[in-house]
Image (tube, rainbow, N blue to C red; front, side):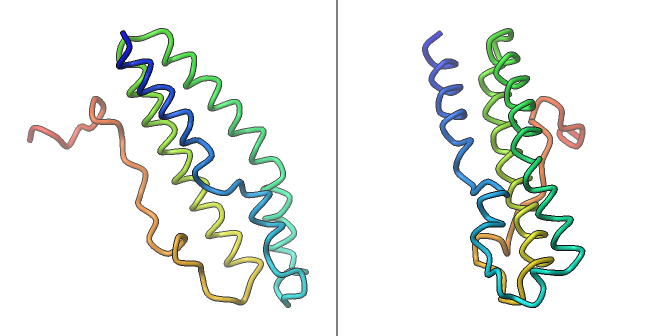
Length: 124
């Protein structure tokens, strides 16, 4: 019983491993020529609402974690997916709002993978 709880706690701690999009938008150079573009304004508005949507997904994953024996692993997987989505969003926001090169942590972002229990490509 301790192991699943430990895994769930570890997964929840990693939720903040990637910068929130609203914070990332605030850290970009406001004097950049792309900052005033319509695409950047749209991206910044989406960044403001991103946090609320992510909290709803997190609530769902925590409930799954408490309801199922494999829920702790599912929670960790959801957390990893949230970090990847956040990085993808930040990369797109950077490309819309900044002329500077992408930071290294936003260059090689992995694709979101299905959890092992749902991976239909295995066992073929």
